[in-house]
Length: 111
Length: 115
Image 1: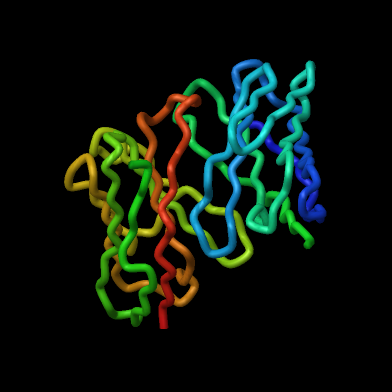
Image 2: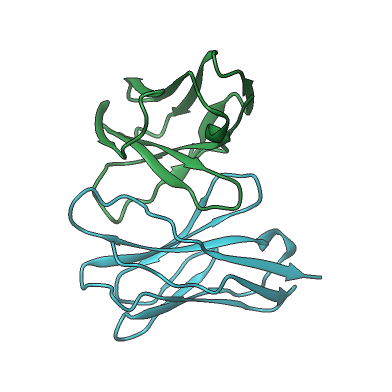
């Protein structure tokens, strides 16, 4: 699996957009970008995934650069409940295709 | 129903005890997973079951013994654990293993303390 690099921590004001970057410069053409988050003492929660195109769902938007070497998860209007560790993971189409978590970004939403 | 349940929520056991963790899902998923998460660390994959058969063992010590009695249930049997095995044990499931478009659904975890 390709490795990802994320900032260790970020703050965001409540009600503002939270933009969480992820670098995956060694990603290959068949590898998906996945985002999960883990609120304190809970299991990880799936947020969104994409391959090449930008994606949006009810939770967030995922912007993938044209060269696919980086991506940004956008929470459009952060709330206090969005405080969590956010994991960016790349998964390939071949093999076991399991999840290997990196260290993630600890997002703190500030009132 | 997109829920994965795990019991117990908390478990304290001695090093000579035998205990089991239980995980259940009713989403018709055919892949189930055990992860271990130490404090302030990311989850680490332990075992993968696909169609009730053990598919992957990530070099986990034999004091951890997984079991998948049917497609909805996954157990983790614990015996002769060490204090360093204290962690949050997470169960997850996905529709199938090996398909990157299928996300994994995680349970809330069992917080295990070995004394």
